Amino acid sequence: MPRSLWLLVIGMMVNVTGASFLWPLNTIYIHEHLGKSLTVAGIVLMLNSAASVVGNLIGGVLFDKIGGFKSILLGIIITLISVVALMFNHSWPIYMYLLIFIGLGSGIVFPATYALAGTVWPEGGRKAFNAIYVAQNVGVAVGASLGGIVASLSFNYIFIANAALYAVFFLLAFFGYRNIDGATAKQTSILEQNPTIKSRDKFTALVILCVGYLLCWVGYVQWPSTISSHTQTLSIPLSQYSLLWTINGVLIVLGQPLISLFVKRYAKTLKKQMVLGFIVFIVSYMVVLYAEQFTAFLVAMVILTIGEMLVWPAVPTIANDLAPKGRQGFYQGFVNSTATGGRMIGPLLGGMVVDYYNMNLLFMIIISLLVVGIFTTIMYDKKLNTVVETKRSKTSDAIGG
Image (tube, rainbow, N blue to C red; front, side, top):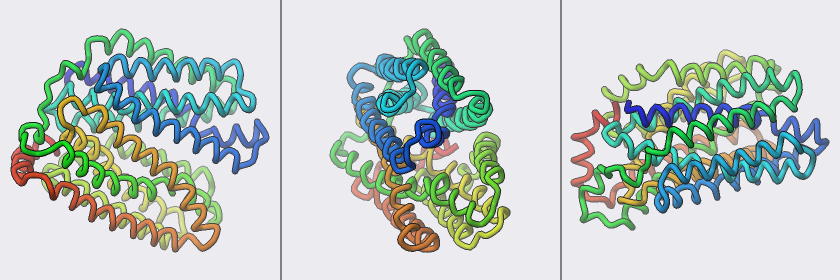
């Protein structure tokens, strides 16, 4: 990887580590320390996600208008000011307002980072986005594990650690990203090489692709919401449930060589890679449907992680490939807002289905949604010129590998 991408990877890891000190503990802090109901906590987290959706779209547009460096810096500044303010005042309702601004600022950073990664190493294809994806998961694993330790000492230390890591991210971006800008990067999109394809058709393809992506996220977020509660009803200790996410993070980091080999041999196009990922997701939920012991949930999580490794990096790669020149940021913002939208809808849908019906029906609904996702993934580029598919097949080793 080029040095510029390494800087983006390190920055993403620091950014997500800082965020992961706080986000797993938000509900606990709002409910137990601020004395608010779980419903209020859910509303606050939904507002945070909604602000992130807005930030995703703003960040994407800003990337196209003012470049990656300024866009990322603006997002960091908004977030840094918010987390520093949180250090000094984390009472109600200030906590809620600051979480909304944190969602907005962090939302701006993500699409700008993904768009920049695609433009600084266009020949890397999937590898560039996969590197950012792995960095995110390392940050989640490190931040969440350290956050629990720090919170056991004092919640005030959580806010301090969060602010300190965002300050480090600001310094890294300010001094390291100044000469990395997508505005000067060469656009090498396969689709851009074929001027007969209209921008409207490209965006339509992105929307169809993101329908399946959103449905996939609706299912995925059941794991930290309804499925986590389901494991408690089965008398599975919370420590064992937490272990599932540790295994998820370790597999994502250590399993990259095996996934790359698998993709190179059996999923030589991004479409095949995503379809296989959706099928793997379905198998995972079929295992969960009948799971009653921890071992079954462990098997389901391993399968789920494999599906995640196939689908998550593929979508921003396709978005970068679809994006017309000067629109990479907007396309990445749309992809990120779709994922955030799935994270908003998923817990609400899952909670309603479980409250009024049962877990088995929820799993059947998720499997049905994933089947729809397979269909949208197969169909997303049907209107595009057949020349594009030929060119993508010829370059699939670079993109998939």
